[in-house]
Image 1 (cartoon, rainbow over the protein chains, first blue to last red):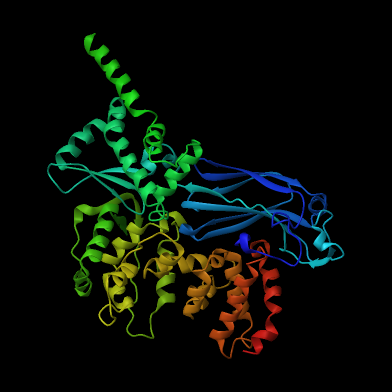
Image 2 (cartoon, rainbow over the protein chains, first blue to last red):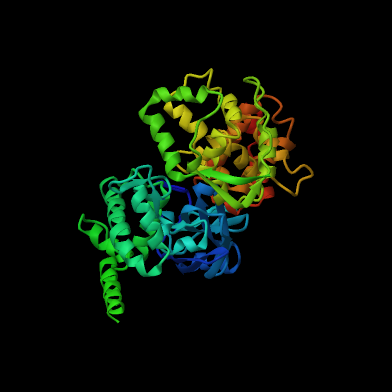
Length: 281
Length: 244
């Protein structure tokens, strides 16, 4: 629903200056092993609409949609706080959540809102079930993974592969799903040995993941619309949001990559120090 | 029973890039089989699938979409939607086990084809509703998934209706509104249960109803309505439909 251009006969809180008051939502997404939990907290400041909800003639509605899995559901609640659980596997990649208040009963006759714009004085409206009473103009987005483990770690958006070439530079490529770092056969063989040992994780992050992330973020910066539908783009967007990072200037790319990887160079120096200490013993 | 196999992600991109950069390679898609690299296939030892035999279309009229959709869905009913969205899986099946089916269904040997044609029939280029419902194999799973109703005497009754007219896929399921399962079911049921109303000019009348739904969704949250409430809403347009 394109709220920006919507104009209805009856007044709607959140559209233009139809009604004085406030409707806003706090939203949190909490993935767990078997399900994805969406948590909502509603804030409403308009007595007419509050009365309708208390009479169960109005309800909060959360519309959840995910185009990658043809998922679209509208949940409704009469409570201001609630959580909704969706089994893992029903959602994938970008999920969009929009919040409204609608009529939940038919034949709401002669509706008037006490805080409506003066233009509506003297007018009343007959409403039916599912008519809009209020909209929250911001939408929430998050990126859903197939498996819970994918939420953690860079493997949710990055993968190292063995290339078709014997020796040479590593190649960075993006697909619809991930950022791929292709290593030569020679390098991949060594990488495969080291990646199994947790002690070498920081070196691999520094030398592989860090430049890979810079590459991906550069693509996002210079061609923001090109890869918006891809899973890696949406996952990185979510990470940037979660960490409250700014992504407006070219210089932000270096900061963001280091934040996402947890300061890879510092970690690798610390691990080198530990290794040096162990070698000296 | 066979293990589930998919092409590696980079290999799928490589195949698509090759076609885009060298359109003459579309001729490969008329060959009797597709030469692919076995080392670019991932096999899951944890999952087996009993792949059904698909009926190969014999003409423009007989696609056998409903029968094939039912069979594909029955063999992969255990898939989560996230698994069924995997472009690697559908690309693998389209290039191997169901090569002949996709060739025949797409009519690659008869149609004027370019790289976009090959990509839309053999691959899912960008993961979205439209591409999932246009790729010749994934469409079969997804239409059944969206219309299957185990509560019905024939759980595939709505699937059969959905495949009876291309409009249902183009103007209902491909639209964001079609992802509301309750609305899709309500609309298909309404048309099935009102045979007299849709006996004449069915395509135009059904399209009119779908258009009305899209208009209503512009200012109402149709998703909160039950199936019976939606059908009551459709009833309001009966007189208009009769005029078509």
